Amino acid sequence: MSATARRIRVLAVARRHAYVLQRAPQRWFDVVFWPVVDALLFGSLGVYFSRQSSIGRAGVGLLLAGILLFHVVFQAEISLATGFMEETWSRNLLNLLVTPLTEVEYVAGVVLFGLAKLAIGVGTVALAAWALFSFNVTDLGFALVPLVAILLVVGWSVGLVVIALILRVGQGAEILAWGLLAMVMPLSGIFYPVNALPSGLQPVARALPTTHVFAAARRVLQGHPLPWGQVGVAALGAAVLLAASCLFLVRMLALFRARGYISRHT
Image 1 (tube, one colour):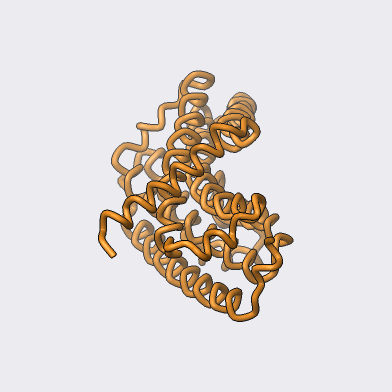
Image 2: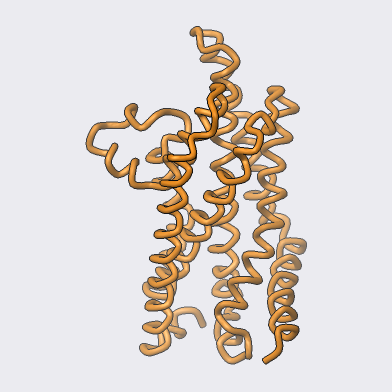
């Protein structure tokens, strides 16, 4: 099997999902509408609290940087998870299983398309933050590169877990595409340090790679050098999470085939 054939199949998957997005305006909600609402909501909260206390404009920047970086995780995870769910909604999963398309090629195609959605979604947050609150994401400087890379890996890992759970328990697990992120968001300390959480949740928060990413981003915005120690911990945690999610997906896919769970999606 040639590398050219693999690339063609990967691009075909990406083009198919791009066509679905183009033909379904409601699917632009996660890409454009939600990012603008988040920027407006958290930017306005930052402005209000900056006027009520001594935190000043720095507080606005911390809130906007937090929601912008969170949208990296959100867009990466949602693009991958909903990409697979499109196949179940359209009853197309059985067709995919009988084509020469491999699982790796399919995931690569959805990830490729997801990167385009991520660029639009995160770009929309950044543009709204700049236009409405004069916040420039480039204030993070070079730190954006490793932090965004780690958040991408985390988002894809969560997306793989969601896909594995859908394969195992059916379409009832689809709510976890949004539900898991709803749990990760407060535990990651996007807008506040870990010690602001209830004491019982702090060990859980420290185990999440996203917590260390957002802590590192706050340090940079406060004028300190990028804390490479925290970046390293976050990168290690993201790598472990990715390996575990891939293993979980492989096992659930094997079980899906062995027990004939395809009937749940056709």
